[in-house]
Image: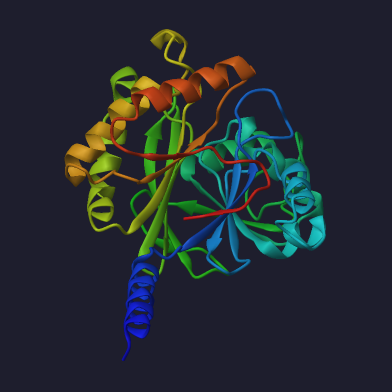
Amino acid sequence: MNNFNRFFLCLLLISSNVFSQKEKSSFQVVPLGVKGGINEKNLSAYLLAPINTNDYICLDAGTINAGIEKAIEKKTFKVSTSEVLKKYIKGYLISHAHLDHVSGLIINSPADSSKTVYATSKCMEMMENHYFNDQTWANFGDAGPGFPLKKYHFQTLNLGEEIPLTNTKMTVKAFPLSHVNPFESTAFLVKNENNYALYLGDTGPDDVEKSNNLRDLWTAIAPLVREKQLKGIFIEVSFPNEQPDKFLFGHLTPNYLMKELHVLEDLAGKGSLENFKIIITHLKPPAKNIAKIKGQLKAQNDLGLKIIYPEQGKKFEL
């Protein structure tokens, strides 16, 4: 073998090793809405599916139709809005019943197909009594007041219990969050084979909420971080650091996010969050506040996090 062939063979071996070590994606994400606040066309909703499938679960449902249209415009989806709504979305995981997290589900329910809506008991009770109650809106569920049309199956989640997500190969486990204590929100740990994604609905920091909910959540997921089975965390940052605690209304700032993630790193091991994907959700307008939040997160990122700001309609992988 001449020197050139030896050199070429070495390059092939090195390239093969690099590609074999590259981490494979487990999930694909299509954000239908990414913000908090007043823009009804871009409120919290994230489609999550196993990689290379169209078996999506919708994490919250603030914006649905406008988000699907944006995804089609960006060529993320190459089918009709109706087909994505009726066939690709297999169900909804609702973290809490505030309108900016459920209005898309409510408004689009007449055009939707039969599927399951998952929520904790308090959240489900609020949706049945205040939204799908045959007064505010027709009852498209299979329980609750009035005449149930039985389009949606309302499935109550028990905290800490892992259950399958119908018509997908994923499972979910729900954890409690505090969103202006004692109002509850929910975190969803979604599993695909041996890998996980964690989505948090609106949440305040433990210090302000006088709660241990986030610490308990970090304790539960720390082994998954350590073993690199957790592919990313969706978590809100609604306000810049200048927002006083008394006006946080159950939300996070960059300061509080980094404080919470340091707790997670302490539990998972030093350096465990290096290049870990943190997907920032629920940024509240105006634009100058969003810019300030992004600048503060960049300046305070002493954990080596890979911070992702999702774009409405643009697919990414975890």
